[in-house]
Image (tube, rainbow, N blue to C red):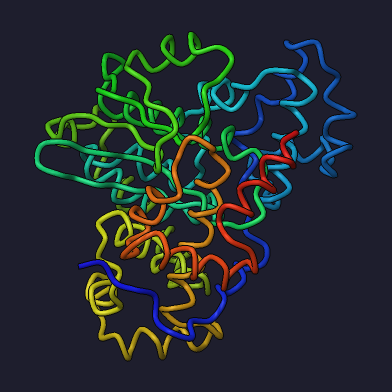
Length: 352
C-alpha cells in the first residue's frame, strides 16, 4: 500500500549549491546557432556565459546557467529540438573521465553501472537511471537540480547522448525498441525518428531508452581491462575527495525507489549497504536527512511533470507513490505554498 507523507513533514532541502556540468557535450552549440542563422555572441551574453568557456571541453559551468543558455538558444534559433541536435554530436569522449571508463568497459552492463556511479564527475545536476524488468531495460536520465530551464532540451540532449553511448558500446546497428520522453510534442518529429530509428512516446513521467536485456551482455569492441582499471582508479580517487558523492548516490537510489514505489528509508539504506541510522548520521554532516532528500526529489519531479499539461495530477500523485491525489496535494502545498493546479496554471501563464 502506498504511504501517506509523514505528518509535519518539512519543506524540501535546497539543492546543493553550484551543481555543474562540463561544457564538452555542449560545444557544438555555437556552430548549431550559426547553422540556424543566429550570431551566438548575443545569445551567450544574454545567458551570462562567456563564449571563451566553450574553447575548453573540461570547463565546468553552472548547471542552471547552462540550462538558461539552452533556453536562450531555442528562442533565438526558433528550433525546438536543438537539444536533440546537440546530443547527436556527442561521443563517449564528451563525458570526460566517466566516458573513458565506459569506452574500455568489458560490456554494456558494466559501462552503464559505471556511468550511474560516476556521472557526477561530469554532470552534478542530473542522474543516470537504469531499470530492468523481466527482459526489458530502461536506460535514462533525470534532472535533480531545481530552478532549471529548458527541461525539454536537456532531456532531448541527454537521451540522444544515451543513444550514442549504446551505439558506441554495441555497434552502429543498435537501436532502441522505444524512446520515452516527458517533453511535449515538438513542432517537427522527423529529426527524432531519423536519429533514434524507433517509436517515440511523449508526455511521459520519465525519460529513457527501452531495449531488450540481451544488449547489456554485448561485448565492447574497445574493451581494455588495463585501461578500464586505470581510469576506474582515477575516478575512485576523485570520488574519495568529493564531499557530494554520498548525496549523489543517495539521490540516485531515491529516484530508483520512487520509480519502483518503495520509498522507505530502510530500503534505500539497504541499497547503499548501511543501516538507516548510519545513513542519517552521515547525512547530518550535510544538514539534511533521508526525508528531506526524498521530499526534495518528489518536489522537483512533480514540478517537471506539472509543467506538462498532458500529465494529470492524479497520474503524478501515483507516480510519486502517494496514496491518492489529496495526499499529494497536501504535500505539494507544504512545499510550495500553493496547490498543484495553481502551480500548473502559473506555469502555463509563464509559458505565454
